[in-house]
Image 1: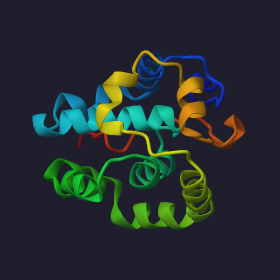
Image 2: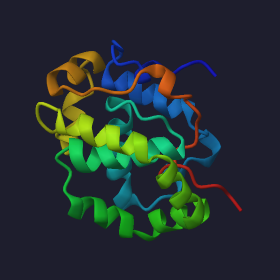
Image 3: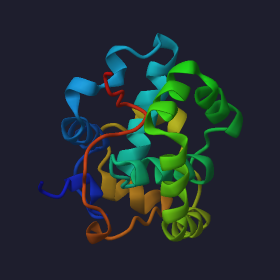
Length: 171
């Protein structure tokens, strides 16, 4: 698979274009947005914008980093994150991934998590993710410069598809 453009720090795509590319990279037939509770749709859209702006791929490692960025690099409150994580739809996805697999992935990702924490603390200010729609037509490189968002080089990502929050595998 070709490298996704939004994963490039200097991507000139707009946030809207990056989100479109992100969605195209996902496994469309397993897109949970078709079956997820309506009250989570806005949160999923915001989460997708976070994936794109912060250069997080769609595999489980990227999901973990997107959560770290959300907690430390955006204005999203931990209470709002907890509300989504408590929702049955989110809990079902985590159960399907498997708690043991999730824990192993978290442990394997510790070096990337620590680098993400450092990058988040070096930001100029937190990105107001709740208001992501206001940024849809701005270029990713400009937003990353404005907020001083440093993402890992492209070679750190393989662009594999399958976002955990969006993807629900059918049984």
